[in-house]
Image 1 (cartoon, rainbow, N blue to C red):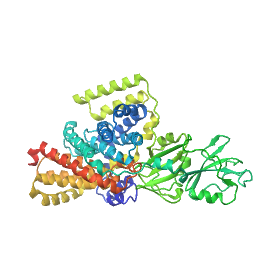
Image 2 (image 1 turned 90 degrees about the vertical axis):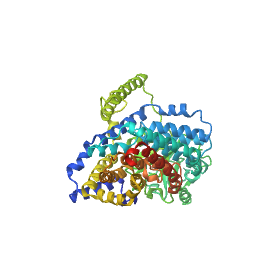
Image 3 (image 1 turned 90 degrees about the horizontal axis):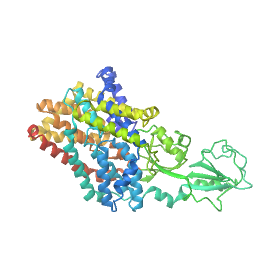
Image 4 (image 1 turned 135 degrees about the vertical axis):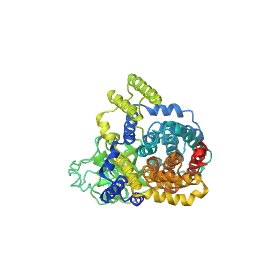
Length: 577
């Protein structure tokens, strides 16, 4: 599983599935043990949180809140402090992935207005949400999955008070480090949309069908304008009417303006074939036109990963043409239709008016260059949801109801007020996420049953126990962090928890400090873009490379884990000293 995920042979969810199937066939785990994950309350809590976050994001104008918060920021550092602190607080209560998806266009836009490259802002945005997610129990899937393991092992689960001091310490220290010192390690890469506007002819060109053209009165297919080398026919402009997307059976007429996107050098070869195509003397000014040129990033759980642009039928699926693909800080060369799409790829698209709606439907992309317009709900809905949330919070704090029950009440009320529709629930349920969460519990069970956890625990004890329990804590933290940097936080927790459990049993001490250390180590996903989905969201728009993440992520990782370890030791001296 580790190799499959690291080498990106298949999707992470498929890697987990393959591992679980092998464990089932070998008899290491049973079918009931696998299926028990689907009834795990903490897994269900994560799913409900995702749905609630989606409802809030779609119905409430969080963008106007950003304007209110950031309007006073005049300098780079001033904006960084406000952005990182506010998003850290927001992500402690709302799932951090949609927070980054929502904030990215806003942050890029602020950078443009203040002549600051997106690459100087987007890594801090992602890192702030990762840090803030560990202030509360519900901020990230890490703590909820870990609580699922604790519950399965009949151990006391983590409470909000257990995380608050440590979470605030690592978040405040991490933000201060990046604002005061770490920003110098951030690269300054050019904004791709700015580059596009300056070099628009590299991507899009307009041609016109002349009076004597052989193409006139032929369909697009018969004219040979389908499946062209390196380019797409994305629009036909006829008598000021735009035809998009272009139907293969559309009949071409004299005077039609044909808009092509892609490798425009191939367009000029087409013009030179003497078929009656020419560059117009008064081409439309595409820079000032209403045509949408939109950036979008491929989601880490996208169904189009590993397929070519042609295979996914991108134009038909999204009513948009890809005019360029950027990966690892560089433009991917070659025929657009033959490019194999990867998670984190930045797509420059020449999009129709319903592009955003189609993105919401398929959920394979994050739009990062424009902010979706949101219809503001009536004041009654605000008041009703606010009153419900206050009541639920009171009951939750008083211990009268569980977190899961409180969230179920909130989501049922949101459905009642039509803030979430049934089709939204179907659309937002991410099968990949559910598979990873459920199967991670099964893999953890296998590590326990086979004694693999005990073997590794014995090795760590023999190596580190002579130096004290703190050394053992540091060992489990480093092991977990290595795992999370390569296979993600959920996979890291599923492998490291049984080891931490065996360590505490063999040392005959309370294992809670080890579980806390494991939680913060699993969330320290700073060194690689593949270690957490928020990193992948900003990876393309920032024009980053793996090297960029490692350069800033390594010192941030060191500071974050150093503070977390120190605070845990201070809080649990009686156990560790």
